[in-house]
Amino acid sequence: MTDLNKPMRIAIASGKGGTGKTTIATSLALYFAETQNKVVYIDCDVEEPNGHIFLKPKINNYQKVNQLIPEINTSVCTLCGECSKVCRYSAIAVLPNKVLTFPKLCHSCGGCYYACLHNAIKEVPNAIGTIEQGYAGEVEFLQGKLNVGEAMAPPVIRSLLAMTPQKQIIIIDAPPGTSCPVIESVKDSDFVLLVTEPTPFGLNDLQLAVETIRKLGIPFGVIINRCDIGNNKVRDYCNSEKIPVLMAIPNSRTIASAYSQGTPAILKVPELKNQFADLLPKITHLLKNTVATLNQLHLRNEINEFSNNAPNSTDDTLPSQIKQIGNQRNIRELVVISGKGGTGKTSISASLFALADNALIVDCDVDAANLHLLLNPNNRHQWSFFGGNVATIDPIKCNKCNKCKERCRFDAISSPAENKSANYIIDPISCEGCGVCVDSCPQNAIELHLSDTGKWFIADTRLGSMIHARLNIAAENSGKLVSLIRHEAKAFAGLNGNQLIICDGPPGIGCPVIASITLADFALIVTEATLSGLHDLIRVIDLCQQMKVKTGICINKADINLEISNQIEVEAQQRNIPILGRISYDDAVTKAQIQNLTIVENNNTIIAKEIKKLWAQVTDALNTVTI
Image (cartoon, rainbow, N blue to C red):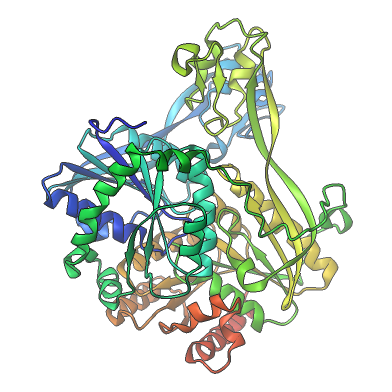
């Protein structure tokens, strides 16, 4: 149970972006500071940090985040290959006449350093991000920024949280989703506020988020944003699961306008203070009562929306085994991405699929997929995804020498004194499967086990074939799963006669996004007319340019802030990137979600016509790409 006399760490999280998570986190930090609480706001969404847009802090401290990577001393290296043998990430390769290192694959586990018998490896710092620290009025402010092109966010998040000052209240603005960056951000929190909205997307992602937080055993409650749109299914779900709904915020054009301008909602809607005033007492009450404990222990079976009674096809031949992929030069690949969640990326991806002829769609958002809610796939095949390893200790063989714990750089191993057990224990959530503990154990008491970290499917939909996947809760290697389904999609498209693959990519700029756009023919970036949208657009454009992927832009909700729309157009023009579409703000999007339809399946709306124009522009752009 949390010691209520110590600083309270409250994490604000969501299963997807665009629910209002940062809006609430920044307003909550300002409210607590206004009520004489000493508060620190920490933006852990290091791929696309947006809190600074609203809090406008004065930064007075910058610190690089370095990851240790191996450097080879060729004068003493014997090319024995031991370093390559122990690296489970393929980040080091020994050739007949030299050693190659791949910093972007390196997890800084130290395995190669420990394995080298000739002291030919030293570890040198490699900058992967930055931590910025300052003040926004009375709010102490910290944020992390992952460098564009770097794949792994958790090291930046770990470094950021290690700098947490001891204030009365600590607000952690977590990344969206359920994968490793989220786990790293929230795992030491006292309480988690899950922000959702009453739509099918919101409910699906809330269920994933709830499953994640329950697995971590952290007390939590729900805030329903835009509570008067959509339907009552989110409330019904919370009631059935005995999850406390701590706040409900009505849909407000004033809040939406403030968000687009980078103004904290609490400054435009002062009545929010009344709800915030009740929030801390409610959290404190939950922490003192058994309701929180029940929330921790009430573990559900994994959500099975995807399973659909599909046969387990693990032993079936994969499409890539049937067809030699080669260049597949007659198949084009369009990837739809966004710098942040909530821009309408998935709704637009599904609509483009509905308009395309002879296309295959692939959902690459394996962390918090929503595309299946619109397409209702009937899964024909199902495979397990084995994306990593997890270590376990045999307590009979273990002589408690402590070498495994000394060398584990991920704090995954706890000693008997720490875990109040007679044995050393490995936390499967913290374990990265690097195997350093295995290689270091003189008793051979530790083993690595291949981890079943997800599933992927080939499915039929009313609009055509679909490949999609789901990463298990708190699992890693989302990038590997994305690469796998893209690889298999290319082969399946060749077998199926599809001429176009449309990929609904994940949000952000990290590992799964890099895996989504690598060697793609064209990337359509969906942004929105807000300061956050503009900020995130620039970072994802930079990534696409690094990856040498041709891009175009779609401005969604273009009329919500015409000034920002114009800024986006200027930015695009300066970078020589075409604006392929401008989509209006329209409640028809939510109505289509509730009906499990794509937007263009209702031809009578203005937004459907706008998306058809977008598709015509995207088709022209695709035809200009040389493949």
